[in-house]
Amino acid sequence: MAKKDNIFKAGNFNDLPFSFNEEVTEVFEDMIDRSVPGYKSSLKLIENLGKNYYQNNSSCYDLGCSLGASTLSLLKAVGKKEGQIYAVDNSKAMISSCNSKFKNLTDSKKLNFINQDLEVIEIKDASVVVINYVLQFIESSKREELLEKVFCGMKKNGLLILSEKTHFDNKYRNQTLFNLHQKL
Image 1 (tube, rainbow, N blue to C red):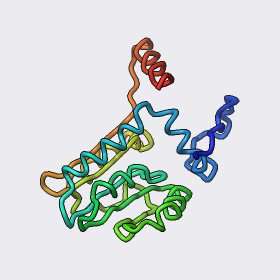
Image 2: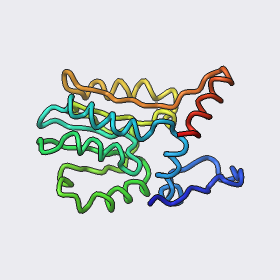
Image 3: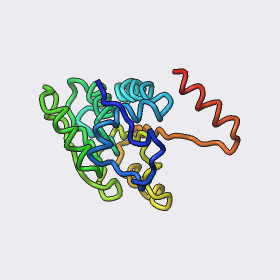
Image 4: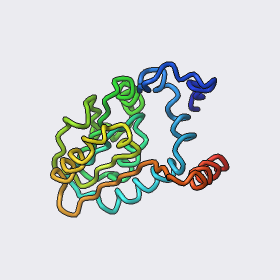
């Protein structure tokens, strides 16, 4: 059971800028479920698309892996096929949590957890790359460069799965999406 997120419950934003530290890592599962509409659906989509696009003996990347939910979806997609999954995050707390969470899985030899900034990771031989709700945390001036690097490191017919929150200038649309998410 995920620990309940109360970090900003009282409207306390004094600890900004936001950081993926130990405190956030402990409650992140609850935090993302509440703040990202359709998050669990995106994980199932990653698994299903991964099954269709993964190429044997290639690599998968989960860029900004946080607690490894997308990584687990990739692991299910790869199944018994040969290859490697690289889960990358710049938060030591998140990578430490992933290492603990995945250490006893029988397929864990396919997993590589890397504590590094996405801007410096080298993408090689990738048939599937996931960037799941991460670009919002990358400086806007560096996003295109990151996406170009991903593209250059992908195999022919590879797949980039990119999920991101959206914001509309129309307040009614934003409120409608917020209300729908609260009902789910």
